[in-house]
Image 1 (tube, rainbow, N blue to C red):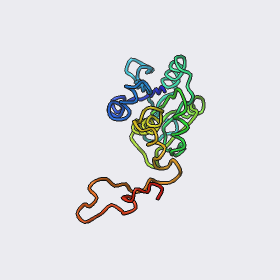
Image 2 (cartoon, helix red, strand yellow; image 1 turned 30 degrees about the horizontal axis):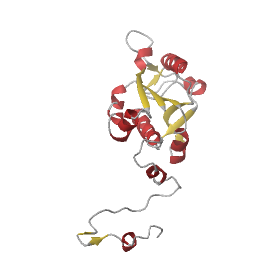
Image 3 (tube, rainbow, N blue to C red; image 1 turned 90 degrees about the vertical axis):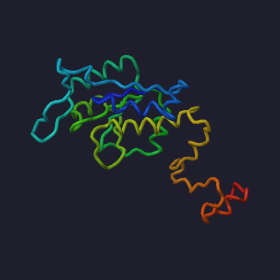
Image 4 (cartoon, rainbow, N blue to C red; image 1 turned 30 degrees about the vertical axis):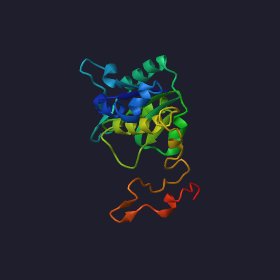
Length: 202
């Protein structure tokens, strides 16, 4: 799977993909994550990618031209299955969405910033809008990292034990049960007898 991410703060996306499971996925060649600085497509030599919003109000809006030019240029290199905008008013991310997206080949994620992106970009280019919760972040970068992680760990071969992902919380619309490890007795608090019985069905 290949994932491109458009952002004005690429530094925020350095660490999440350089460690743990996401790093192993990339090292195995199962996942490629490429972060693109939107200012590469800025409208002037000052690196401008945002402007004041029509109608007044505080906060800047990411402009049409940089986003459209970036999406169109990247789309010449990859045929995207989805162009995803991370936004608080998108569809709430859940395990089923992650499962569906993990079956795709190429994804492009757009990280909003400031007061968001020009509505015309949403209308003309975006195929899916996703929220990771009913709250506001400084930008879509952290949401993009969450989405990549949720998708990437589902790719076949990424986890050492592939059945692990199938027994995760939410895979069957239920939460995983409490789990225990050694010692059996920790300061008088013991592992439930049924887990020590050897009867896996129970």
